[in-house]
Image (cartoon, rainbow, N blue to C red; front, side, top):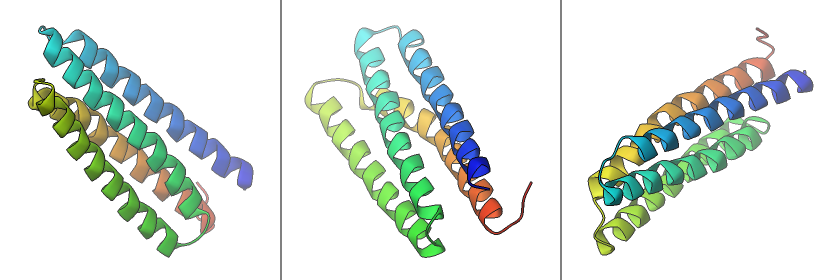
Length: 132
């Protein structure tokens, strides 16, 4: 059972890494103006970093209890709010376009959120004996 759970985590982590890679590639390729490109890259990168933290925390939490999982969700929400606020402040203070940062961040975040929810559902189903 533990091997299956570990395999599920690895599969979701690989999908998450692919999402971040695609997001960074799009952020690097699509914007024409260098300032917009940098802001989009920062957004996608920060979403990727918070996604790593989120998936690891959720992995830890689902092994413990529903209460721990809910705390992890709240903690990650706060972390992401701080990351967006700090990123927006950094963009504005450097004269970079805030909208590009927001698109980069949330373009990656929205997809990562689905990966994270999928992992939690799969892990909780396996933990409760739901199997495949």
